[in-house]
Amino acid sequence: MSQTDARPATLPDPRRWKALIFIGLAQLMVVLDATIVNIALPSAQRDLGISDGNRQWVITAYALAFGGLLLFGGRIADLWGRKRTFIVGLTGFALASALGGAAANTAMLLGSRALQGVFGALLAPAALSLLAVTFTEAKERAKAFGIYGAIAGGGGAIGLILGGLLTEYMNWRWTFFVNIPFAIVAAVGAVMVIHEPAEGRNRNKLDIPGVLLVTTGLVSLVYGFTRAESSGWTAGSTLGLFVAAVVLLGAFVLVERRVKAPLLPLRVVLNRNRGGVYLSLGMAVIGMFGLFLFLTYYLQVVRGYSPVLTGVAFLPMVAGMITGSTQIGARLMTRVPARYLMAPGFLTASVGMFLLTHIGLDTSYPALILPGLILMGLGMGTAFMPAMSLATYGVQPRDAGVASAMVNTSQQVGGAIGTALLNTIAASATTSWLTSHATAAAAGSPAAAKALQFQGMVHGFSTAIWVSFGILVAAATVAFTFINAGRPGSSGAATGAVAAKSDEVPVLVH
Image (cartoon, rainbow, N blue to C red; front, side, top):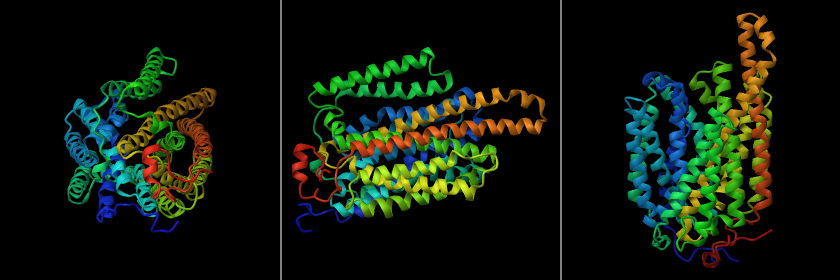
């Protein structure tokens, strides 16, 4: 097949690369917000008098609204128009951020975080689906998704750096206010240069029962893991939330099989390749969130790093992600089947995680932590790039928004599960270790007791990182087993019409 034959029938939008700048900027803002507030939280807690019991809600309110409403946001983008949804999401996110920065009390801060989650659930799937319908030529799609994957993968670490700088040198409120210029630039750029293909719109009515069932089901699931962290896995409230999540999500599947215009057409997730991407990506994010969480505490509490230095310590991982995504993933995506990038990528990240299981009270950053972070970044960047592209590749244009939303949903739900699951494991391991060494702590000096406390903390972190290592290996196994698509885009452009009818990923199968 010649290059000419492989080109799309319609000419690409001449402003598509400018559009990528503003789509990427919006995605960076959303990803940043998942971590930038974490470092600022202690300062915000002191200023506003937030109780220890309520401080987790600054994080959880965002996760619940975002994770619970993503599928709804994705379908709104399909129905209402992706460009319009994108601009509304940006505007609402900026206003919610301004409200958070000006918060005078706990309720105002928590309300602003929930609103950020609501508008983020509109913005994130609209951004990814705009990318999916804007870049259709194979090599350009690979490059565009490489850049987008680097932003999605490295944005969390950048949030830690920026959060540290703003908190240490300005004020915690600037971790909210910083979103406003991001949103203004992205919105103005979207109005000026983003063009959405008209044929991609979905004119069906909104599936209200599906919206209610999936939103309440996902909120129950995310909240259940949050409750498990504070109340325990066997508490009645925790088990009740998990049971409710299973019932509600099961009912959602039944409804989606029967309604004429489903919120989530099951063809989107039952496709072997997309299903494999959603599952493996969600699992990998569980492991990544564990790393951010525990390494941040390790560097600040045990090693005494400042917030800024902690953020700078993550920079090699960001560099690794950008390199893996743009130089490895994007270059090989049109030559190598996706599973031969995703599975080795997750395994490379797991090797980095394995190195980090060996942290101790006086671990050398250059000798152990640095290579671990670089391997994590390279591996995740290489895997994220084809994952982001394959997750929306071959879907019918009218389903692009909801397919994009599933990528974000798997990441948000994975992040919420990872935070609660790994935090519980770390806390249990620390408690067990300290209990077994209680006699030594009682007999020693205050300095020795503090050292034992830190040792117990490090033991807990190491135990949880071991679990993250296992989850990343499992993610690699899922990616290799489920994903059987060939080189994304190698023949896709020529078979796009067939794909639109059959909803099969238009690639060679190995």
